Length: 120
Image (cartoon, rainbow, N blue to C red; front, side, top):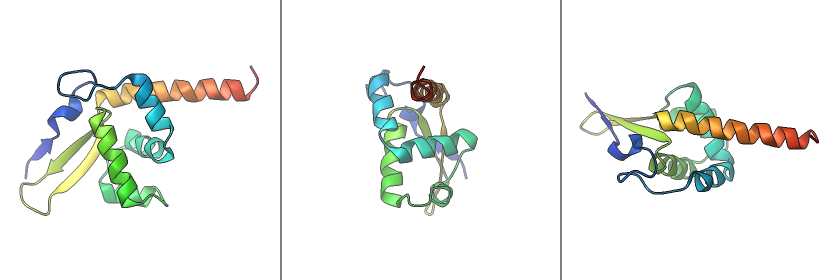
C-alpha cells in the first residue's frame, strides 16, 4: 500500500507544472473564502483526511471542501497524497513547503489588519 503524491502539487506556483497564479491573486482567493482559511489552519496543525476536515469544520459541505482543496492543490499550497492502489483508496492532505511559507503571508495580512483595526 504505497503513497502517491500529486506530482504538480509540490511544485511552486509559476513553475511549468503548476498553474501560473500571482501570489496576490492567491491571497485574494483564499482570504475571500472563510473555508479556505479554516482548512489551511487545520492543515497547519496536522495532515488530514477529508472526513477529518469535515468533522473539524462544522457547516462546511463536502462539495465546498473539495472545491477548496482542489484549488489549494492547484496553487501548490496543499499536497494530496493517495494511499493504496485499489478502491477504496485513502486520501490525505497536508501543507507543502510553499504552503507553510504562504501561511506566513496570511499571518502578516492578519497582523496588518489588526494594526489597522487598533487605529495605528
